[in-house]
Amino acid sequence: MQAIAFINEKSEILTNNLNQFLMHKTSYKELSNLVWDVLQDWQSLDVVDEKVSNEKEQIFWFLIFELHYWGEDKLGSDIALRKNLYNCALYLEREQDLPTNCVGLRPNRLVSEESFTSMEQDIVTSR
Image (cartoon, rainbow, N blue to C red):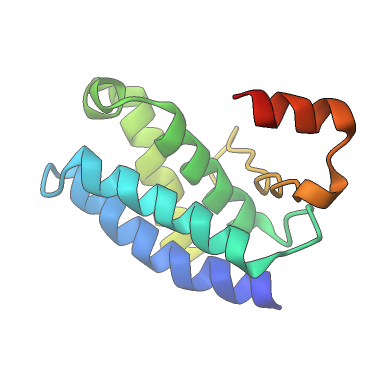
């Protein structure tokens, strides 16, 4: 239930900001900061189940990944990408007309230091 409430709350914020970006009314930096905030907030929930709960969550994580993956130039100029992002935002707003080829997964949880193997610990401490 905690994950579903999170997705519902953050979907509204994400779609509002994405729509503003697509209409050139907000900056890429603001959108990027939102994505990082969402990821940080998700980590603070400490959700153990890695399976998405429904199609809405799947589209939500797809959008988060796409916005994080593509740079400002691509997000600003690639018409097919922008249309796909817009269709995903519409789905999150209305939960109808599920976009095709939009497969999103929950982000991996951070590994706690207690569960590091000695090799992993050596890699982390050597950085």
